[in-house]
Length: 238
Image (cartoon, rainbow, N blue to C red; front, side, top):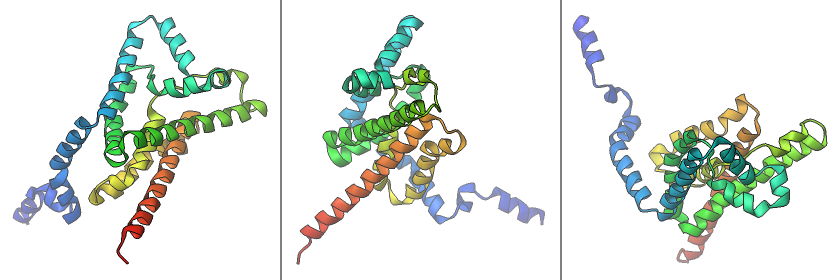
């Protein structure tokens, strides 16, 4: 019995994962290299990440009061959306107020690079912009309604709201069909858990924005799939 036990516990752990998981594990190094090549080939993803990183680093070098003023001026709060909507909707997507926010850049690089490979630069900008703007305006509408009906303090109209996360959430859902089939189930579970899961625990406006952007991205993915099926049907020989 002791020898048998040693054979079981000594068996390579990858062999006990099952065929699908073992195959995915075997493919992981190649997948990582392919992802790196994909990112390095995307001028859009690299350029966007570089601008965000540069802005973030510069903000950390200026005095705190200057940083707070810049973030406030670039925020998509209700006051700014009323006074200069186009400016803040664009600029807010490039402002990350803390260095910890740069931890989002690897995911940004991957989803934007995948988007560029699939639908090109313009398509990626439009899809990410749709998620960023759509989620921002939805959250703003909720805040405005809350203030109007007395559920929120009027000071919430000045709350800061900047960052890259709405665009990332939308793109993460939009590129779903580009994920290799063997990873797709895990990808859906992880992405939904990351972007939508927090809303189930904490009903904050930021979490509402992430969930909204993710759902908008899923909507775009379904639309793209229908368009692709229609195009294949038209192109198919009769």
